[in-house]
Image 1 (cartoon, rainbow, N blue to C red):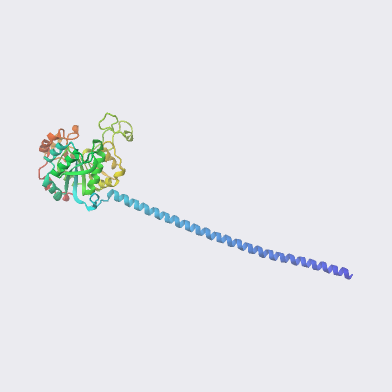
Image 2 (image 1 turned 60 degrees about the horizontal axis):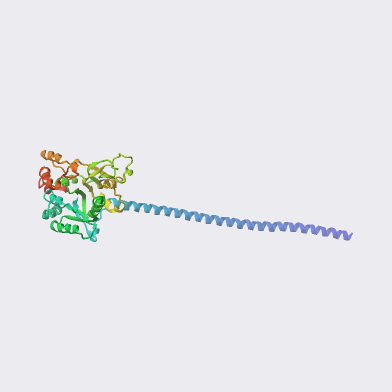
Length: 374
């Protein structure tokens, strides 16, 4: 009996011990699981904090990038504006000296072989010597023959111009190789060089076989001086010539559409004027301005995409019969020439005759106050 009771007691203790171990195990397991859960939650919280920090940094970088992009855009716009409307106050060709402030600069396009043409202008509408200097000082009007140099440095052609310039002091020498098919490049060089030399309100290009009334030219330009970007002349739209035998053939005719199309409106090349802002635009952008075969088309193409006012003034292209009729009526033209010759026909012999018939009074250019004409 005693043995059975002892055996029953042992079973009881074993059962109690097993139950105790079970609950003890559950307790420890719960604790360890709670510890693991806590560690996992802590890790998740840390990862969340890191993610939030990364997002904050990413947003800050994006905001900084937008600010930099906006600043670059503003700088670009500012630079572009300066290129279009800014005017240099220094002469880059003379090492930074201040440019002379004048009313208008007239460049008379000429060639090595045109000595007689130049003389015909000196004897008619273009002042000489002290009068030429006085015109610049008192009226702010600069008139110069513009010419480059020959393909061979210091050739006899260049020396002849040197000698002529020493006598008359009325040349504006360009860093340009002379040649008929280089007129577009010469025009670009003229405006760029003129802007660097004179701070003018207007820049004018004239051919050396055209008659000009300087007083009327100045008075006409003065009427437009309050406008920022003006392009003045006789606007035309001639056909785009494609035949290889044509004198004014356009090699890039395909750019102007179908055969038989016309050019966009542009001033005829005998004479035109542009305001300071446009001359400065040409000067600042000359490396990327495209040149077409014809000089007048080329100039017009440079202004197509700009906010430019095209002023079509018939007084810039009077025929010689028209200027005579106007003179009889007490009016004078800005410029006169014959369309059939693209200038005054036989200008060397006839320029004085045109001047006698179509020329303004000798005092006209001196009596006008261009700064009061607004």
